[in-house]
Image (cartoon, rainbow, N blue to C red; front, side, top):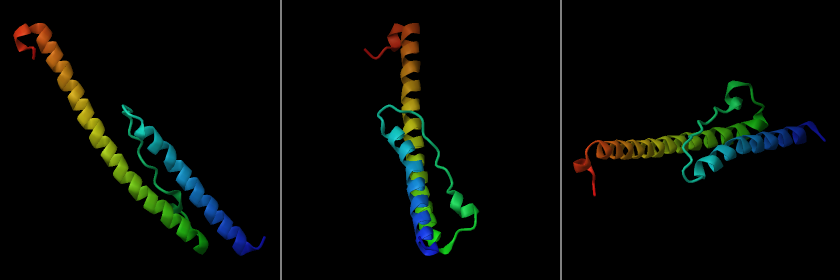
Length: 105
């Protein structure tokens, strides 16, 4: 295997590794009722020197990271809304127990 072929292979492996790193949190967040929002990890390739052939792979990692940041934000918004609904329900239930005239029924 020549050096250029090894570099291309390395870039492909880096891209696959980056993709697999982000797939698991997406799957976990997709489960209904799952309340943990996994923060995205900053791509390591932007912190170190990257060979010319690996630049495309790093660019893909950065694009995926950007998508993950938006999904993380959406997850946090959904979780905040769910937590507020749950808190409101708990408060309403408690007030009803304290004073039956405050029950919805």
